[in-house]
Image 1 (cartoon, one colour):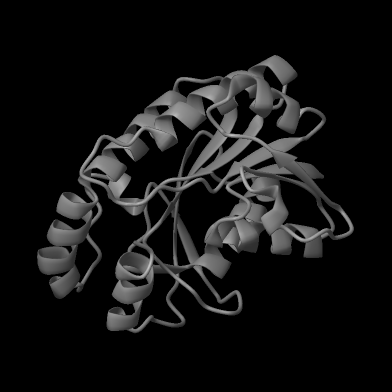
Image 2 (image 1 turned 90 degrees about the horizontal axis):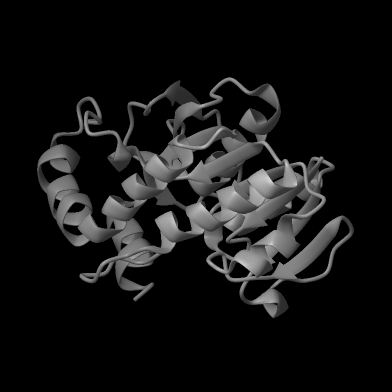
Length: 230
């Protein structure tokens, strides 16, 4: 299968690209920084801003599916990265007749998501980090989901929990709407997307994905995902 990966030079996008190539897919890595991706067999690189209709139209032509791992940093200002790119990408897919779309969102998009037994997370980290510091980001994720839901595409909204780095794919868990857990390894997120691409268990709904086999160091996670990225 020939797939387009948006956000291919980001931490999740790189995992997606590596795993897709290893699985035998052809990958069009869509990025604003093409020089950051090394040439490999099966990999084509398309330079495009995901909110530029002409560039996106050119990037996805001839592909069978689109996987979006686009992301943005926390900000006090209004964020439009997710919803604006979703609008442009879905319109381009409709023009090209490409039906299959998987887009990374978040468990936070499910208003009823509360991990079982995670008292500190539910009462301290989630209200502070997700509902306050990440408020504008998650608001735009919800707008993105609304844009995608209105289309006639075969879409899947992929909802990981707190993302962290782990070197290998584990025995991750998926569930409809959201999954009951606090953390998701990026390797597992990428693997779940590639599996769903062909298995089609969650078409036109949301797929929660969590990692249960390993847990990140909380202090290290906050540093790497919050402080260090700023």
